Amino acid sequence: MTEHAREAPEGNFDPSGQKHPDKYQRDLNPETFAGQNFGLEGPHFEKDAPTGDTFKELYAMLPDLNKDDLRALPILPEGVRLEQGATYIDLSNLEQGEFTATSDMTVQPGTYIVPKSEVDFELWNRLRNAIV
Image 1: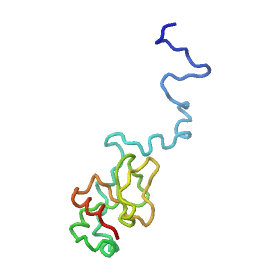
Image 2: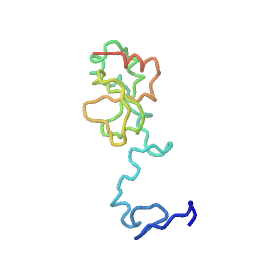
Image 3: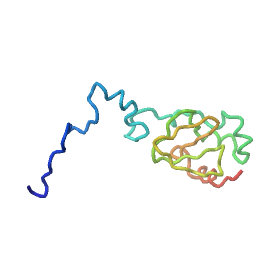
Image 4: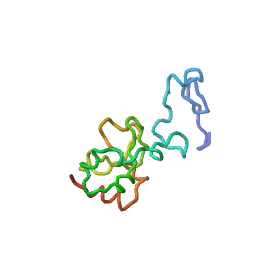
């Protein structure tokens, strides 16, 4: 046997890499690619998210920001899954600083999550440096 040849594994082996038979695939893997980033496929809530100026409580929480600043901050809706590897900041917990999302993270109730990809770098740096 050459060094490049491999023995076939014992048992049932599917060369396509599929883990489960087609009829069970959806049941056994209901969210197969959830949290993984594959181009522009799927919903992008950050593009149509409400902005910070629509949340009256943010005016009190972030007194150094004016209405135009808040209007430039998309706030992701509760329950939205964060994109794996993307950077975010929670306006309700600025002390935490920015964070990188993992594939299992979603927007929790009572948080104001802002995606870095949608914010001007100067405003983002002001948010990072704002300690309440």
